Each structure stands twice: as structure tokens, then as C-alpha cells.
Length: 143
View 1 (tube, helix red, strand yellow):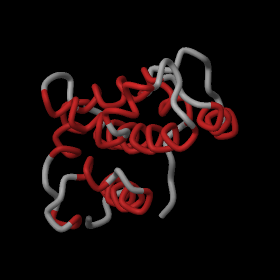
View 2 (cartoon, helix red, strand yellow; view 1 turned 120 degrees about the vertical axis):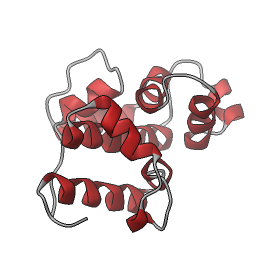
View 3 (spheres, one colour; view 1 turned 180 degrees about the horizontal axis):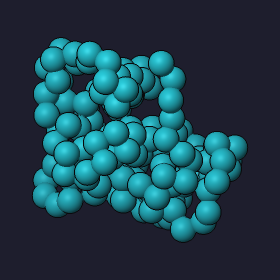
């Protein structure tokens, strides 16, 4: 089961100012390096404040590396940021409620061996697992 949310919705989660209408435009933005604010905006969708917000940000990009970046992330850091934003955008789309999406992402899930979806989504394979669960929920397939 493969379904994706729109590239513009992913860009919205990251707070990108420029219009992103296609996967190729999103890919180009990622490869050229997203602004640091893209990671901050993405993490803030799940953790509006507090220590968990900072902890998650530094799990995506280590603290010293993040602090060294002036305005722009490198391509590999941008890819991790986009992956997280894609999972968040998918959860918000499926649940159609930001609070419900946040609850899903931050609550342990049996199909993820009791791990939180937001933590599992830090790897590409983990993100795919979370997205698969979300789309099964969306289409009413036992998840």
C-alpha cells in the first residue's frame, strides 16, 4: 500500500516559504539544503515546547552540528528533516486533527514493538513502517 501526502503539505509542516507543488520541487529543495527553520518547525508540530522538543531536534541533527549550521542544512540533514516532516504530514492527514496526530506520534504502538512512531520515524525504514500503519488506519485495514 503506497500513498503519499502532497509535497505542498510536507513543505507546510516544514514552514517553507517557497511554493512546493511537486515531488521534484521538494527533492530539489532538499538537495540544495533546507533552512534550519524547517527542522524547528517540523519538530514543533509534535512537541510545541519543552525539553522533548529540544531532544528530538538534536536526535535528528546532533547539537554541536546543528549549532554550527548558520542558516542552511546539508543535503543529508535536509533528507532527515524531510522524512520527519513527511511522517508528521501523513499523521496529520490521516487523523485530520493535529492533537490526535500528535498523540499517535508520541504514544507507544504495539506494531512498533512498543516504540513511539516519532522515534521509529528517525530512520527511513522506520518511517516507512509508520507510514504503512497510518495508511492502513486511513483505509480501515487492521493495523
